[in-house]
Image 1 (cartoon, rainbow, N blue to C red):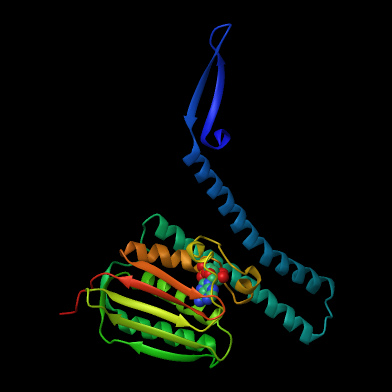
Image 2 (image 1 turned 90 degrees about the vertical axis):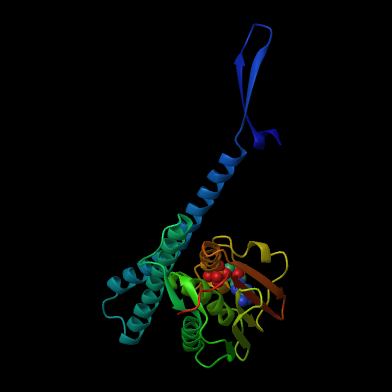
Length: 262
Ligand code: ADP
């Protein structure tokens, strides 16, 4: 307990006694720990794809007459790993801008949130390639004031996750509606693998994943929900997560009052 809370330095005071100076370093220590963990995570995430790429480069240069088919496979895998690094760096930049309260680009403006949600759904359906069934219920012409790209990131991370953690034939329900209390509610419900209760409070932590292998396999960076959380917080919005392990999950964003276009 004392080791964690106090830094203790002993200095000779008189010949018979000594002066003990205590200082609360808990907060600083926690920040340092978080920083060290973060750097370790980023390094690990970048190291893995780089190792794969380097391995293939070596093979390709060692065996110049490798059959064309095998060459193509290796190049395809290298491209996939390169894309993974790019995704990670893009997510890191987005997150650090959000954390520092900086905007990505452009000014705030009023935009059609309903239209944007339909774009997110279209992008998700493209990735799903017909493997999932979609139920879509988007109230038209809900307007929002902010930076469209940030809301797009927040909503697409939730929606992409729904298909990534739902096996084929699963059902994804995407809804956007105005609530009675001058709020808009965006929700994505899936019939996927679900989340055990102990994980739910930690899902928005950077690099927190329940199943590392599954997340990587589906192209996850482990930063999606952290970005969603920061982006929503910027607009005084909240994220509610409900899930039943083995049955499915529901991610719901509640956004404050929306200005209507004149
Ligand atoms: P990742 O890139 O790993 O998906 P996220 O921050 O988007 O990172 O999500 C963190 C973790 O939350 C995921 O690794 C996954 O374990 C869990 N998760 C997120 N969305 C869902 C979902 N719809 N169903 C089940 N688990 C989910």
